[in-house]
Length: 152
Image (cartoon, rainbow, N blue to C red; front, side, top):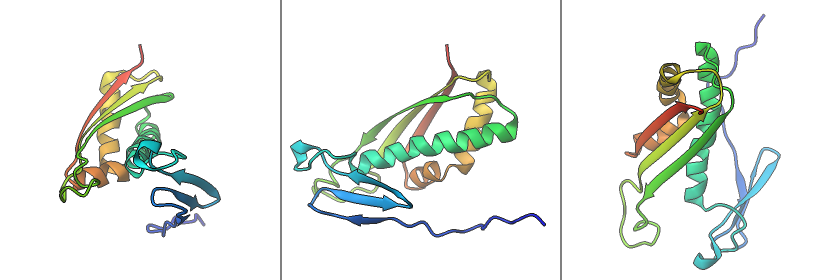
């Protein structure tokens, strides 16, 4: 009898917050810091919360991209992913409430597999359907422009 995976799980994270800017996060058996740079009163022990959100999109694109590529039979090899975000800081500076702080994200994905541009577009379309971080950003009103290209 095959085991069925749960369709819904509970994710957990905890943190000790030794200062106004630093949070020492624990997820499963992993720990890391989220912090502000020194020029904003932090200790620069880790990425900022907003940097962490952008990095999470990159990580999710990688994981879901490989799952989608495998399902489609597309060889994407390893990926190089970069993200550039237009971020409205008026909210974090408490100047005013901002409806869409992450306004625009450019996500560039370079595939080092044998897949050509057309196959990569199929993978990209599937990633948009299934990547929870992509869905979170787009549901919040962020425009994400993706460019998936073969290396070279």
